[in-house]
Image (tube, rainbow, N blue to C red; front, side, top):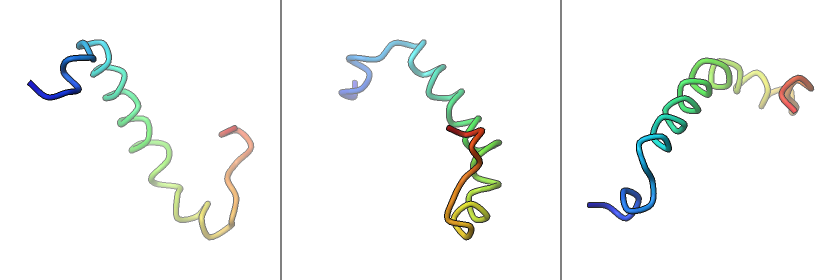
Length: 45
């Protein structure tokens, strides 16, 4: 058993997976453009 498994239950894994999918879908496709511009959309704050 890893240290994380001692503290986190399956609901934590669901949140982690949801955040990962969101980042992959909404953030990563835009990140290069935002980095180049030196900013990110206000709607992200």
